[in-house]
Image (cartoon, rainbow, N blue to C red; front, side, top):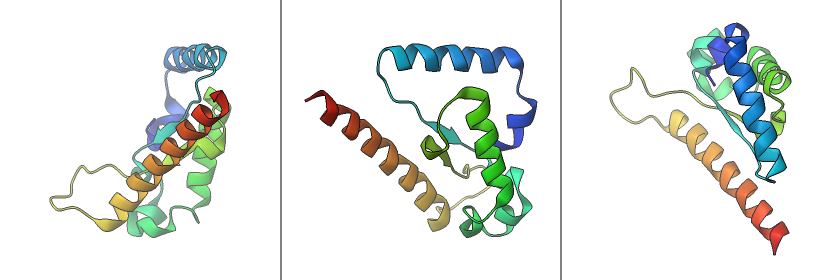
Length: 115
């Protein structure tokens, strides 16, 4: 979900996401949201990606996303897209790897509950 578009998302798309989330919950499948384009949503983050967790605007976008779709804030992972960069950047990679690590941990926790 694009952080810069959360506030203006089409209601039909939101309803589809809610329905998918409800079905996944019925099947006991954990859900996460990758919140992309955080740099487009917050000038502070655009200037310095390391301030992503200090940004009130990003926190507000995460909460808004939680309220719209129903996925807990702890399962919403803000990341920056590679779209203008030519070479890899550590700060972008760290966010992506952190999100992936949390997603794997969530999946492992769910599998451990089943055993």
